Image (tube, rainbow, N blue to C red):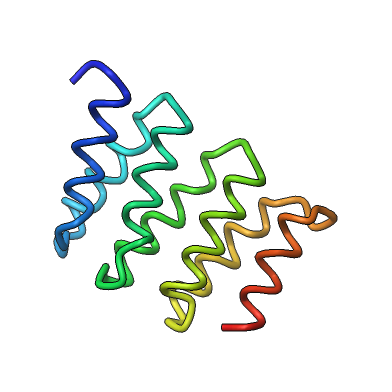
Amino acid sequence: MGSDNDKAAVLSRLAEFEIDDPVARSEFSEAVKSIGSENDRATVLRSILSSATVAPEMAITAIEGIKGLSSDTDKASLLILAAERHGTKPPVRAAIERVLDGVSSESDDYRRVRAKLRNH
């Protein structure tokens, strides 16, 4: 598959299905990482995190994918989405905290995520 947009569209569609197998989840994660466009990559991560029914392991896979984004604002918006949808689950919350460590602690983005975590 050539274009990042096409790859993102397929992966976003796949994100609607449960991926229980750890090997398949790892392959999915690698496919997401292979998307060169950060916008398209963020679209796939948003699709995963938007689902209220996604398994905690898949949410964690998506949260870990946030680390690869360069924009703290994009990271923060996805981490807030993760906190809103999945932040009550301790392993997911721990993953959010780990990725948040990569956001400048002096930024508004960091404070927005911290505030969301305090409220969930």
